[in-house]
Length: 280
Ligand code: PD2
Ligand code: ZN
Image (cartoon, rainbow, N blue to C red; front, top):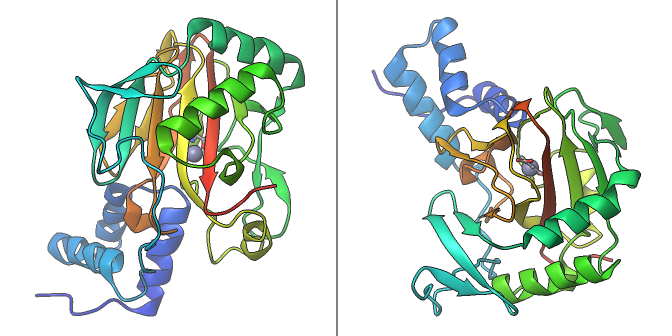
């Protein structure tokens, strides 16, 4: 038996599954439990990811640390004031793991200057406008204004050089602190086009195109950044970073990702989101 198309109802359900952070494997398991044949379920998921409802990929350039004209030289990239190591480069989803993006002193300084400003992290409310506390995200966090202090300026200038993306097309740095037992369940970083708050959010800087998660600490146990659909987990190492981009605001980008439960120790990260346009 073959699946010729998917119903609007199934598309809606698969969209909800993806938005709720369910991996492809979890969606398939739920379909099997409700009586689907395995081959049909796999085929339907494939159709969902490539069907006509998929928004077109952006034609414009999107940020990337390894641009087509500049292959890394001996596994390193020049980031304006220091060399950064390329530890992993994955094409689909687009993910690059970077070694030595920040010095230990820069990590310590960011933690020290943010520690007193940390509050329980919020996320955009899923069914109304505004923000809400979310049990899926149990870290504490704070935002720096762009260019707020000398360390922030230095890191932003480094990211601008590395990604060839204007600082003005980026949000202020966010610092997150996870204690043992804290996690950030899988989610997408782009703004969901179907969400009621999105059109207003997009007026300030447009969509997010890419994320850089910088590790300000190593973690005693747990706390990997996970990409469930890519089967990839990145162990936090102080000074390293993971870059990933999404050329459309859709689960088909494969960029579902999360922060796994911290089992022991503390995890500190700084996140930079790159936008289509000027964010101010
Ligand atoms: O801390 C992380 O590993 C993590 C995971 C997923 C951070 C973010 N997302 C984020 O800041 O968006
Ligand atoms: Zn994220």
